[in-house]
Length: 87
Image (tube, rainbow, N blue to C red; front, side, top):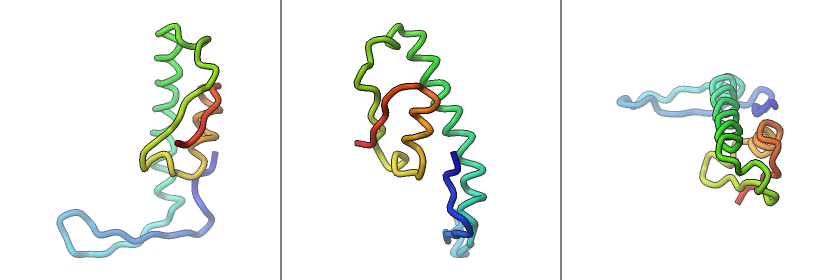
């Protein structure tokens, strides 16, 4: 899943300074995407360990600010195998 847009950038202020920096969305996605993938792999393992795998027909609901990441719903569904929605 490619969570980054082509050529998009964003600006931010470095912690502890007034300096404004610009970074590419693609570079940020290179950092975030593996962590999100790892997180959903851990969710899949915990569901399997807890014996809830067969009793979650409605799937899972992602909420909070992180749920707004582009492609997150599809990535969660692909990794966990559960129906997934943003709520």
